[in-house]
Image 1 (cartoon, rainbow, N blue to C red):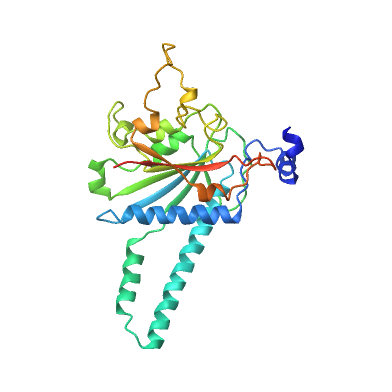
Image 2: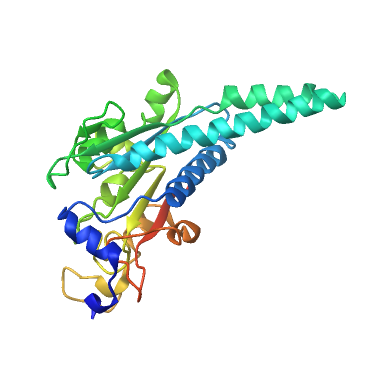
Length: 281
């Protein structure tokens, strides 16, 4: 069975004896996810009339290392991109070609794009060890509390305080638990329950095994029709899955999934995935 297909990586995870440890944050995956997030922010900014502040919130973050690694990777990517642009300008200058438009473009990009704010949160229920580092900070909040605290302002408040957006990360959500319904609640419902409108979160990204109930709820989180349970016992017709009903689109981030290494990977299979759920207009 599983043991015969296991290897040193599986033994490493088991020897650590940490119930909060499921994903190995490797270099390629971290930089791939960081680049994806930066590209998504650029894409979303391109359709906005004014710059938008972005908060990336990791809920159920455990020891907070994912946000720590992403912050470092994003800084390195941005620094590398800026250096490449500067080198391009220097080459143009040496060749005697006009670089006025290039410099203007670089200046405009630096003014428009603002690095996102990255925040790690966890309620401490899994007792993940905390690192004594000034660079790793985990705010003690449940998933629901974190989303409410960092939710973008409503359209009315937005006129006063500027525009902002929220992207949520969640790695290995507890089994048979669904936090995503709170990600998709209308912004106005925070202060006025029952109100309808756009979901709080612009995009949420789930990391872990999917569609089988290992991470999150098989139906409420992933929309697996085989897991639908009707209140009246009539399961002959499955309604529109929750995330679709709330106006979100599921997108498989296959390039990132290929880079993942999880606790349960073995010679036979690799099940951990990265899946995005994006809010429609």
